[in-house]
Length: 366
Image 1: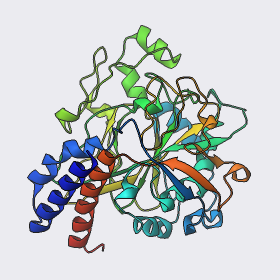
Image 2: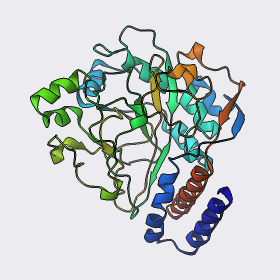
Image 3: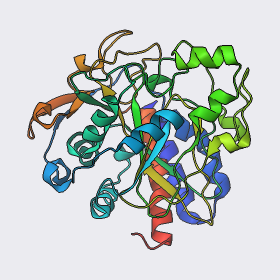
Image 4: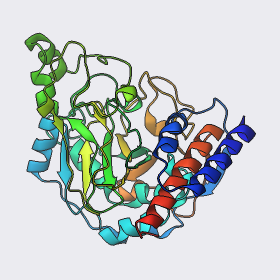
């Protein structure tokens, strides 16, 4: 299996080097890209040393204060735009660390250190401690849960409407902070777009009064356990039992280096369209409160945590590293064993990375 996938990747590399405008090739490998999200049942353990890159220096990240306005917007709409969270210089240096391995969850040391030692854990903790949440007034210990890097190219198929089942335990509003993880979208390119997300309040407005009441009480299961990738960038997803107006879909198209969008991954969302011939690229880490427990959709992704339904995420010492408070983080220089990405994921990452490199060269970014 692994040899066959490597041959596929090599063939893609050869074809890719022959042409700069092969949109059909990008679309042909879309299923291979998706295959990177599905892992084989067995993976080898990779031993690694945490905290040895420049991104583990917590002093380079400024303190970001979450305001009452930020909290109100997030828990009303399920998303909030946070400006100037991190220095643009740091994000630009992080982008230089892109490799085929870094395109999947927690596989590259620089990105792992960034997610664990930056100020993102502190920001997540401030939202977890908001009035009206399940975790209000609790000890705010935050675990880095997972990440991925989303890259979309002009002319290529986009990821269609979906919810992140692993990060949710139902059709839940943002304040159910023991049952959802908080997702950031951090642009790796300047002047780019965030994922297109359904506004939480407008989404609920399309429900019946009875169902809306159950939604705000956190009683709704997943509305439909599927994705709409085959539909592409439709204005809104065709969801049963709820009327979704086109205005429910929120497009944030003016993200700059250092900005971030925080959103509820239980809300339906899709990848942004690449406009005016530009790519979109973002790092999307998710953070869980230490009291969160693993939900029904517990596939491990790229890091095989070995947990089962109902287990606290903090039980895994290598896959859910503490990101806040700083004194509880893993000590830099500590060696951990972390299972690595499958052969499918490696092949998908190699192909995506080839497209990234060629597109970046064409636009003078490399």
